Structure formats: structure tokens, C-alpha cells
Length: 483
Image 1 (cartoon, rainbow, N blue to C red):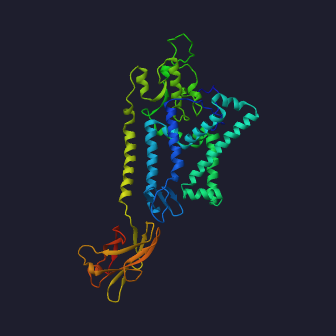
Image 2: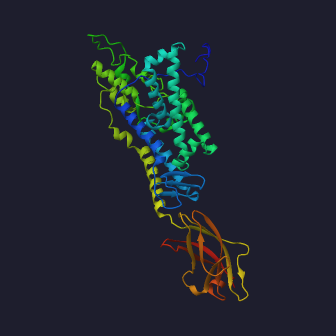
Image 3: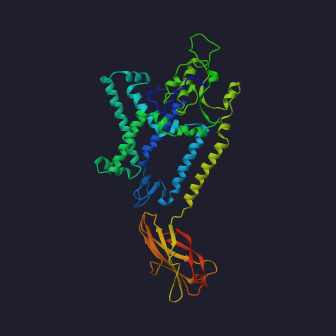
């Protein structure tokens, strides 16, 4: 810009929403979106009602976030608070999975699986069913508030609210026993938190899916701005083959103009876009790569007898070769490249690590903490006593009795060691179901023994469930009276 040219105003940070009325379209990508929407909504609404027998005193809901007892149940898997690293690992895997798919296939998550997209699709389906397709909805928007318009709007909003209530209701069912909570909700005896959560989820679903829609993707979601760092010239995303479609022009019946491109400027790709953009203007922040513009363009190309793919999934690297009339690079060469392989390796490594950790975890959970003040106590007969704090967690659904014993290291006579709990004879302790019990543990070394006269010696403490063969061990330090 030269000094003589007037400075242009910067673009606004926020633009007021203009209603978008996507036209109905048929095609492979629209069918895929319907299937995925049905599957994901089915999983969301049905999962809390699946039963899973875990035995007495334990919940029989297959998937349950039991916040009251600080546990997470997922079919046969039970996660305790101290095992939160499993949840952290799953969150990391979700992030890496998002990076992987975005790097390989652009914003496929946004276009097919994001909750905002899924519920917006559902709301648009209801809107189309009540008010008609695109042109009818545009006419209704411009129409004065007649009885017909009021009736259609109230019908649509009522259905949206019912979907919102079902959404919030399904969400709270994940946190407590679903059948019992449903009864309590109907009778008005459920917790105020449950009603509040349903109300908030209902209103947000109603507002986001019915009115905000694409504004959530543009302004509220950070991912459109982050995705630029995940994509490169090998990323497969939706693009317009400008070198084939331009120059645009209306198709005249019975005439063929060799200077005209394949695009007849029918606006079909714009009319079906849920974000209200024109893909022919190039990649844009608003594009969620849902593929509906591809279906619409292919339908038009079929009608005018032109090859499909004017708008299609492709990589930027394919542009030069296609402009030169050469075939595009094999799709797998775009997907299987160092960046995506690195993401997949990290994602798979964390997944394997979580599975290994899940199956290697001990059924008995306990820990021992040595008391530091004093380090040891000298008995009148010369024996050395160490005091420890033993914490035993009963992860079963019924009371359990555990036997505790100590094992001396190699070279030290086992007879020189003795153990007691709470200062009493015997080394068994009963722990109530789903509780953690703290016990005072005493380990005694005989007078003059190698253990008693050594400075620090590592010993092994074993805990065994008397009802079965489950057992676990840990190491701790015995402090002796060194010479």
C-alpha cells in the first residue's frame, strides 16, 4: 500500500449471524453422515441403560461415573481415584487421535463426529420436516408472523426442546443408576443437581443446535485455528478444482463452449453447505469438510454429463500434477507419511501401555509408609522395632480378610523377624467392602540379629487375600541400630 492510498478498516472480530438454510442433498457423504449420526446418538442414549452384573453390593450399570464413591465403571473395568492415570492416558490418546486424523484427512472430526455437528444435523432434520426444504424456510423467515408461521415455529422449538431434554437426561444417567434416577426424576425426588444439569444441558443444546450452529464452530471452538498447524500440503481435504471449473458460465441447452469450464455456477455447493460458505473461494476457516458440497456438485455433474469430482477430497500437492494432466498421487502416500506415522506410533504406544497397565495391576491395593520419628525403638530385651502405617484398600464388593507377612532378604534368618498389627498378636485384618483401612504395623528384629544391627535393610511385605490366591507385595526399609 502506498501512502496515497486510504487505509482500509480492519475486518471485524465478530460478524452478526445470518441464518443458513442448507438444502437437502443426496449422496454417499450425506448417507455416511446419517449413518454416523444414528450410531453415535444411539450409543449416547442407550449406553446408560446397559446392565452388567458385578455381584452383590456393586452397581450393575455397564458404564457409570460413580462420583459419590469416586470410581469409574466401564463394563468389566473398574477405575479407582488413584488410577486416574488411565483417564489421563485416554485423554492424551483422544488428543493425538485428533491430531492424526486432522493431519491425514483434515477436519473429518468436525464434519462427521463432533457433537455440535451431530446435534445440529438432527435439529436441521427437524426443521426441514416441520418447515420444508431450503426455499420454504427462507420464505417463512421473510414472512410476517401469521398463524402458520407461529404454528410451525412453536412446533419446531418444542421438538428441539424435547431433544434437548433427552440430551441432558441421558447425560445425568451416566452418573448414577439410570432406572432409579428416571423414577426419581418423574416423581420429583431426584437431587437438585440432576434437575439443574438437565436444565443447563437442555438450554445449551437448544441454543447451540438451533440458533448458534455455525457460530459455535467459528467463534467458540478453538480447533479451526489450531488445525492450521496440523495440516500441510499432503493433508487430504475438500477443494474445488479451479483449473477444471473456470471460467464459470451458465450452461445453454444444445450449445457447447470449449472455452467454458465445467462449473455452471448453479450454487448447489453453496446451498447445501451447513456453514454457508462457497468452497470455490478456497480453503476457509469455516469449512468443516463434511462432504455435502461434493454430493451436490456430483449430482449436478451427472445431470449435465460432466465427470464427477469438480469438488472433491484432494491434497494440495495434487494440484500441480492435475493441472499438467497427470494422475494424482496415490492417496496412501498422502496418508502414510512421517507426521501421521509419528502420531499413530505415539497414539498406539500409549494405548498398548494402558492395556498392559490395566492387565498388570494387582487385585490387592496397599501401601506402607515408615514412621520417621523415631526411626526405631529399642525394646528392653534389645530387640529393634520399626513402626509403619499400612493402608489397605478393599476393591471387592464384599468384606475381605487380608493376611500380612514380612519376608527377610537373602542372608538373614526369617526367624529373626516378627510382625504385628495395631500392637496385637496376629497379622490379619478385615477390611469392609469398597473401603480403605489404615493400620499400625510393627516389624520386630530379634536382639543381636543381623537385621537389628544393620543400618538400613530392605524387607518385603506381602498381603494375601485369605478368600482366594490373590496377593501382592511391596518393599520397605527396616532401620536397625548399627554398631
